[in-house]
Amino acid sequence: MPLLVMKFGGTSVANLDRIRNAAAKVKREVERGYDVIVIVSAMSGKTNELVNWVEQTSPLYDAREYDAVVASGENVTAGLMALTLQEMDVPARSWQGWQVPILTTSAHAAARFKDIPRDNIDRKFAEGMKVAVVAGFQGVTDEGRITTLGRGGSDTTAVAFAAAFAAERCDIYTDVDGVYTTDPRICEKARRLDRISFEEMLELASLGAKVLQTRSVELAMRYKVKLRVLTSFEDTDETSGTLVCDEEDIMESKAVSGVAYSRDEAKMTLVTVEDRPGIAAAIFGPLAEAGVNVDMIVQNISEKDYGGRPTAVTDMTFSLPTNQVARAQKALEDARAAGAISYEDLVVDTAVAKVSVVGIGMRSHAGVAATMFKALAAEGINIKVITTSEIKISVLIDRKYMELAVQALHDAFELEKAA
Ligand code: ASP
Ligand code: MG
Image (cartoon, rainbow, N blue to C red):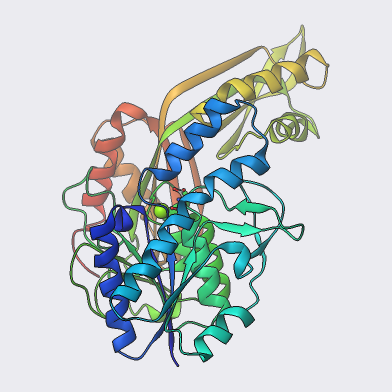
């Protein structure tokens, strides 16, 4: 039997009507001849409520109990989905993570898959079950404790099952009808993409386009799982939504496929640190230990009279999420107090945003950076930091210009037009 994985996000199972709507889509695939593994999220808002309850009960909660509570949202949806399918005469059974079992590491709230043995589910398919409904987002450790995969983790569950069961495709049903060239709420010319490569999707996902959990795309890329993002709110067919696929399956690509942004960025500059071997390690080591996710890093050379004698000094600038600034500040001040680093001043700017253009076409098109910088200059937007990779150029700018920058770049690369 060919097999499909269908994943329904929180808004697609938000109430009993929506669950029936989702179940009808599953039934249609069964009628087409597929065995189906359905992965469900918690009903929308449920996980937030559960997280809240945990935090109110115990501010410094035990992560094992956090997982025990927070995983429960998906259990409810899995059971309800199986019941709804049964009411529609589709033989269905629900599975919590431990029943499969979905074996994970014991990194609670951020667990990773170790193994998904197929035997239990395969046996049920062999007995005539048509749909296995699996609770997303959760797993179990070797010791039998419940784990969760991190927020948005049901996407990753879906891809892992598609890989483990060699599914023909993994359809991710959500509340948008696909992946867009940029956020349609910011740019009304945003266009839905028919196809996008894993690599581009990975950049867009990690740059703040929240359609898919980043880890799910990494996993899909590694196991070459064809992923489709589509809406559960409309009738859809084989051609709906956006296919996230291998680069080889994309005929033609423009220089840039999408514009991504990340609003809550901050920039920190250490003014006049010593320019000597080991200085970067001395700065970023303590930051890493403090759990700070440093993103862009720029080191500037500045020759300056330092402490009365001419010494090579440099300024070190890096970006990080706004909510990690306090932690970063403390780590750096502690390192300075311990004598590991020295600096004259620590300048913090919490009003910046990152805007990026992404495209595999950049590898073969010249002048992408120049086009980007010209478009920003034409709007009078100052660039504070620039970083590039093979398929991405990112700039840090004042947050108040973020929307304008996204629109200007969308226009400059003519993203409203298909390739
Ligand atoms: N329910 C979980 C969350 O809200 C997992 C998911 O929906 O993907 O993060
Ligand atoms: Mg999600």
